[in-house]
Image (cartoon, rainbow, N blue to C red; front, side, top):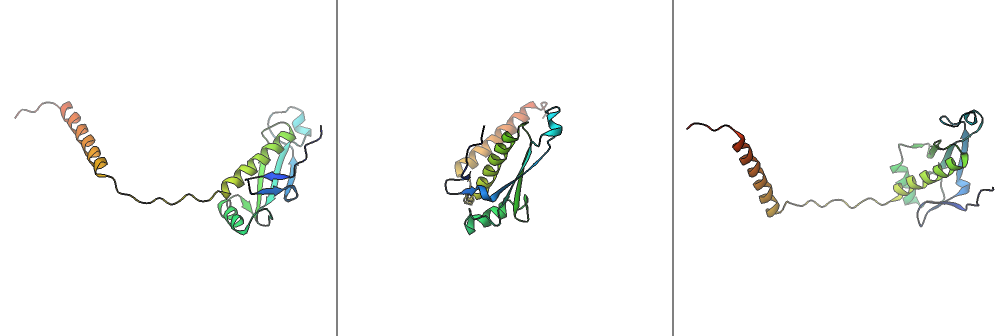
Length: 146
């Protein structure tokens, strides 16, 4: 059965990585598979050059390079997949992992937290709870002769 034609890897609604920017490497996988492990190249490595990608705007490229800096080697992101016995399933897993990773990196940063003071009621509740614990522990002590 022929693989379906894919125009590109859709990361977000506005970003699609073209197939021409994705390159694949195949090797023998470890793990289950019996004799097939020794002959089939089912392990997949998906490589994508994030630093030179035309799919990203300059702002997006900067964000991806910054957030994925620990995973990039010379601007190239490598995803390895070998959890399945079939190469096709490993290819799909690698594509999904790349899309999720780049999608997370492209997400805008969360707004910074505005510092706030605890309310008067919350302070009072906290102090009352502390006093209740103190009273409970006082009751557990042996009575003292006065």
